[in-house]
Amino acid sequence: MKTEESESPFGKLGNPARRALANAGITSLLELSKLTEKEFLHLHGVGKSSVPVVKEKMKAAGLSFKE
Image 1: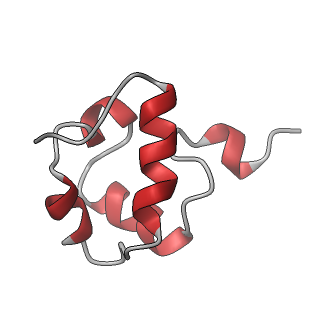
Image 2: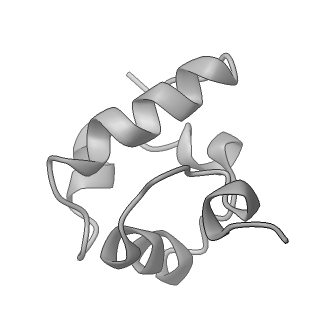
């Protein structure tokens, strides 16, 4: 059986942040890489603790936030 984390490209991201990404139509790390870190933090439900989680996943995929 798959866990929620293995099904999500965003890893151990909290549910409010997952919902914020879903509400913004962001379903992949590639789509997330089109945002700046500041834009990501401005999504309702995303907090500072979400940044290192997604940065780690993005780095592993060879991606980063837009400059």
